[in-house]
Structures are given as structure tokens and as C-alpha cells.
Amino acid sequence: MDNLIIKPHSFVDIITNSSTVIYTYVSDLGSVIEFVDAVLQSVPNNALKADDLFEIKEVIVSPNLVVDCILNDADNRHHETLSKINKDLKGSWNDLNQYVIHNVSVEEFEHLNNEEYHLETGVYIKPREGTSPEFGSLLNRVFDSVETYG
Image (tube, rainbow, N blue to C red; front, side):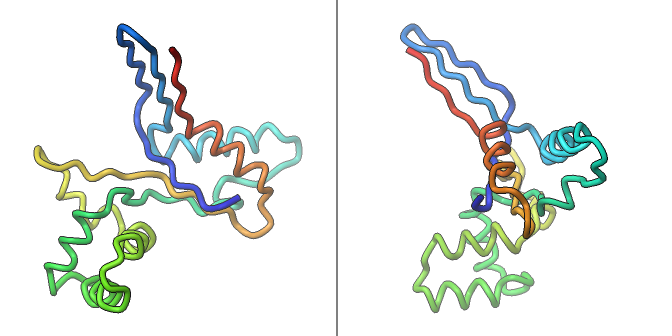
């Protein structure tokens, strides 16, 4: 299984005059951990927990504004690293965004949640060594689905 990032949203059902679209996503970090723990508890003689099998954390999944904030703030602890990535890779947004996703905590930029901007976060799941790829695929199918009807 590749690393998985789930964008959390609530259950949304959109009905128009021509179609129905249902989006189902995980609602928060705790939902993923509770689900994995519940599955593991159902296995007899098992003492494993979600944290034993996966690294699970909340991450920023729309990091463009965060990248801009860091690059414009010389006092930010990530400024030097992000500036180097920006210079060496000639401003590749993918590499800048990947740095933010994997190295910048959500708490550092919670202040960006306001009337003008919503800091979009997700749940990052990285399987630990020895974790079954099938279990990771199950998490992906359970928590990250988009269906369209009509």
C-alpha cells in the first residue's frame, strides 16, 4: 500500500434534477483510529492497535497558502528549508507542498482558519513495516470513496 491521505468531510448527498452524487469521507483522525482498533479487537488473541500498524496523523492537504506564509516569514522555523527547496527546485509546487504535508504541523497554522480561508486538513496514513498491503487497501476503500449516480 502506498501512503494514504484522506481528506475529511462529512457525509454529503447532493440531489439535482438530473443526478444524485454521494461523497463519503472520514470525518476526523479519531474515526480512522477507532475503526482500525475495532477491527483489530475483533481478532481473537490480538493485542495490536492502530498505532502498531500505521503512522496516523493529521496533515495539511491544501498547503499553497501555508507555503506562501512560510516563504514570506523569515522567522518561521521552516523558512530556511522551504526557501532552499524553492530555490533548488525552481519553485516546484509539488515539492513545496509535499514538504508542508510531511513536515508542518496543523497546529502551527490553525490561525489561518477564518472567514476568508479554511485550512484543509486530512488524515495521513503510512503503513509500518510488515503491515499487510490488503489492510491498507481496505482503509482506502472504506474511507475514501466518491460515487455518482444518474
